[in-house]
Amino acid sequence: MLIKEVAKRLNTTTRTIRFYEEKGLIQPTKRENDYRTFTDEEVMRLSTILALRELGLEIKAIKQLIDGDAYSMYDYLNIQRERMFERWLEMKDMILTIDRILEQHTDDGISVEDVVALSKHLKNLKTMRKSWSDRWNFDKQAAEYDKSLKLTGYRFNVHQDYEVALEKVISTIQLKAGDTCLDIGIGTGNLSSRLLPKGIKVIGVDQSEKMLEECKRKHPEIDIRKGHFLALPILDQQVNAIVSSYALHHINDEQKLLALEEMDRVLYSNGEICIADLMFHNETHRQEVICRYRKAGNIEAVEAIEDEFYADRSLLVNWFHSHHYEVTTYSFHPFLSMIYAKKGNDIL
Image 1 (cartoon, helix red, strand yellow):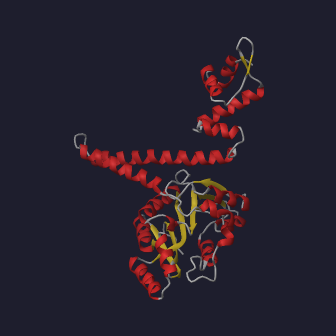
Image 2 (image 1 turned 90 degrees about the vertical axis):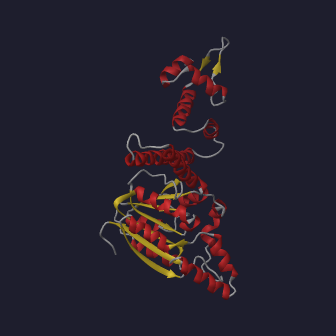
């Protein structure tokens, strides 16, 4: 098949086909007169390239993908979905902010200061969504994560009552067969995999590709998606419930509030959220606990607390109340709590 025939069949241009040839993505046979001929296999390869470009993948990534040098097609599309959602959320932030300004001002009432404030607000949101970094290297932890859970034998055991907390979440969340549950920071799937026998669909989001690989290996039924608290790769109002365990303490307080907004965005109007995580009742309680550890000479505990972002539970509860959720809390021990929040009037 000649290049003009291929271009017509694939609804593209000969110039585009030559561009991909220059980049080394395709290698059609050249005749003596310099005409290019394409086999059916080469046409299929070109069709794949065009489809991947429409999805936004870069040339380098496509070459690695179709040559089999790196990720699988599934992996690449998962990564691309994450990027597309981040861009979509940026656009959504811009539209909502502009709407807010237009609602608050008349035609002649919008000043330069208003536009500058808009710019700063949007820049802050964009920076916050992109500012988180994995300084704990969860990719490296993934393979041995389940074995490394320190359940006993340590002066400060961050996973004290780990199994109790997971079971409490599962018994608290009110889902039925056919419902969809989102698990944010799913890790290797220790929490939400317990919902699978009940016929509940689970979407697992994590920023660590290796954690997702391990989760998929253990629980192939789970729909794994690369993403994070601040940019969930899910459209608006798509899930019945959200769960999270031992993950929220990896983002700071300002990011936690944005994370709650993201959860609210993807949750059905009558949905529920259940979070089991490292947190203190409030700032006073945090200082009291740290003071006790210092007096006891348990510097390991103090350093562990200060290395991460244990939540102020009152801050999260106040957010839920202000957004019309009914809330109950449960304390497992001084630095581990569960928050259950439900939209509507029904509560445990």
